[in-house]
Length: 87
Ligand SMILES: [Zn+2]
Image 1 (cartoon, helix red, strand yellow):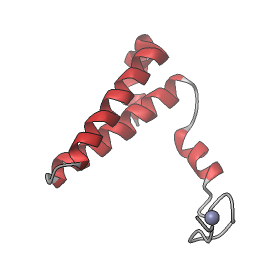
Image 2 (tube, helix red, strand yellow):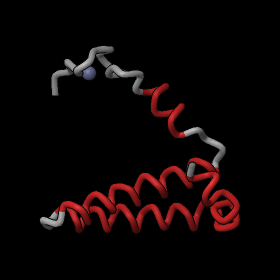
Image 3 (tube, helix red, strand yellow):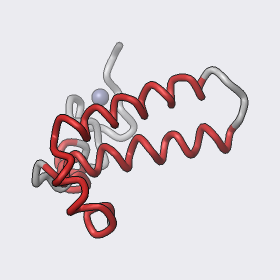
Image 4 (tube, helix red, strand yellow):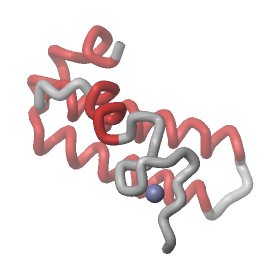
């Protein structure tokens, strides 16, 4: 979806510019986590995943496929769901 919406613009901005936007959005999420505005926090989560998806698209990485390959509904270390790793 993000590629359909913003693919050409993301590619024109490039990896460095998009990565910097992602960092900025992560910082904004960090600020919202300190507050009490749940809707604003939800929006920051959406911004972070949107910019992460844009960065993955530029790199030619299918974010959903990569996430499911590493976390296929079970912990990659203990192979359990829920995770049974001792921390
Ligand atoms: Zn585990």
